[in-house]
Amino acid sequence: ELEPVKIRYTRRSGQLESCLMLFLLATAVSVPFFLWVKPITDMMLTVKVEYCGGDQDFVVSLNQDMQMYMGWETVPYENVSSQLLGQLAVSEHSQRRLFNGTVPQYISFALSLDTFESNRVKSMQAAASSFPFCLDYDNLTGVLLDNYGAFFRAIAVQLGRSNATSCAELAEFCNDLGARLLRMVCGRTCRG
Image 1: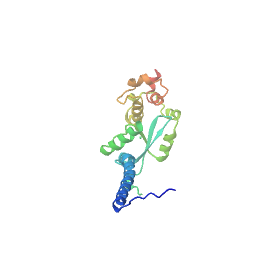
Image 2: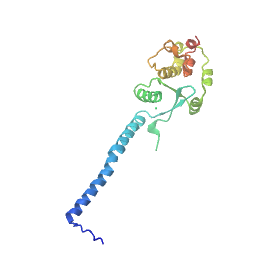
Image 3: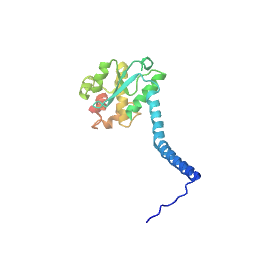
Image 4: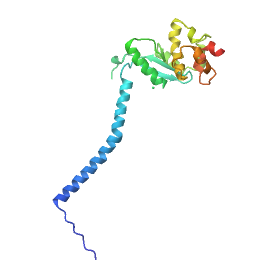
């Protein structure tokens, strides 16, 4: 026959046990918060500031076939109730536009929503046929230079030559499979 074990349970041991349980519970809740939740929250706030700070008056989308970011200027953010090359393009445009309103460096902006949608899904063949000149980017002037400058700078960044200013500097890439956009804006150089 087993006799029951007698344990002396005093008020002090009861409070010590309760304090120990409270400490373990607080540790079990706070450790995951400081290890996982807090760093993720801080990162999300940083991303929010990057994406939502500054100029928010435009939409950008990548046309995979043309290897070009297309943009459309929207209603100014104040009037609304309620992303690599992509990141570079968006960051550069949002920051530069705040200061001097210059021509976008890496985004080709459309003048209407319909044109934006059309440009967003346009094939490289259609884009090349709308650029019927067999000229190099360096030989363009005026409006053509402004309109196609973003195309040249975008492919230069994609090819790792962001400081390139002429088609001759990118000529070695003309036959690369992923250089369709280069062959379009540097037709004379790439034709050989």
